[in-house]
Length: 271
Image (cartoon, rainbow, N blue to C red):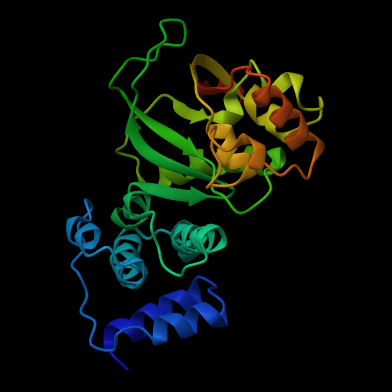
């Protein structure tokens, strides 16, 4: 077997790809050559081959593994972080019915060591692009961005564990990185809309309450996250509602009411 394919299969197995995906990888061009890693993915974008994207990114896991080994970061953090490759590949197959990986603009973060999954949440090195005098947040200062991986139900107790674990993780493995704030931009921080649609014991509202929401931008990101990646404001009639929340959100949107992406910083209680 071609060494590029063999290594891709090896990593796919580590990340829990199922047998059908493994067979698709094994059946790819036996003469394939690895495209060298480039965080801008210029060559891969030019080739427009989603299976080649997947095979290359599975091979790029070696780069991440070498970095984690150098930093003595635990293996389970490596695997959890690299799971984004599987999550986005499966997501694409679910929506479009084809095998491969499209979201390489995002997964390059998982390879180059700027994003880590610590428990339920991901944390990415970044710089603040909004400010708050009250909370002493300055534009351009180093921060940790919080991201919410797909594929699992959000349970706030798991988020609390992640907040605590992240503080320990970055102190241990990146003591040189000085930051004061964790920030998050998400449809889940829409504190104008969601409190009216969700029950008081909602995990989403509990997550929202862990942040000071500093600003809101009118956007309908919630549609693709709640109803599916291929859904948007142009096909509202096609939105299938399986839960009371989906039904309430669809009614809200179809009546012309706004939704938002909220941007906030984690409250001191959780730092």
